[in-house]
Image 1 (tube, rainbow, N blue to C red):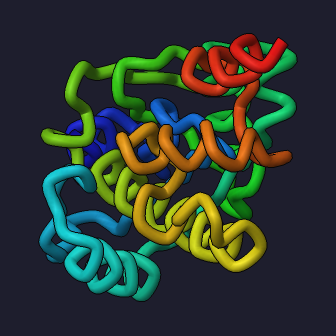
Image 2: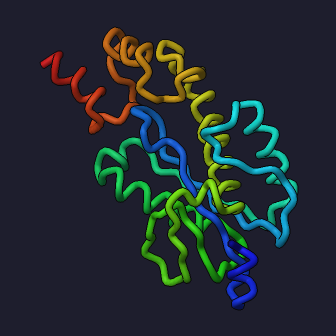
Length: 197
């Protein structure tokens, strides 16, 4: 995919993807990754990998990537502006975090409002190396943030659920009430607050 764009004079190109859309706690994190041409590292959709595999591949990506940018949107911003806005904003922030000026962007089907050539491909993280790399970097980066939050709020077990609405997390949410990093606009959190009223 990237080589095809490069042959048309569109280079460098970054892939952008996110992690944390379905979580009810913690930030939405996007990564933008520029890989060198003919990159030879094993890549796959981050959701299909174990945490150890993701961390190992993330280290490989960081060694070979031309540049990596991160975009983080906090829970309060998500609650205020909505998930669709947050997704686009995280992508833009990741793009702005790059030191290298890109000529093209490949995303996993999300169109962002920037004046740069874009390919928006369904299942881009499965068929495009730079989007797959971005998916892995975003997931590993977000997991690291949630490990930090687990130390601040151990009662929610963020080190295991990473802020996603697992049955255990939902039960803990009912017992301990939402923390400051829970997304109050998301129904599992909102339901707890409404039940208490």
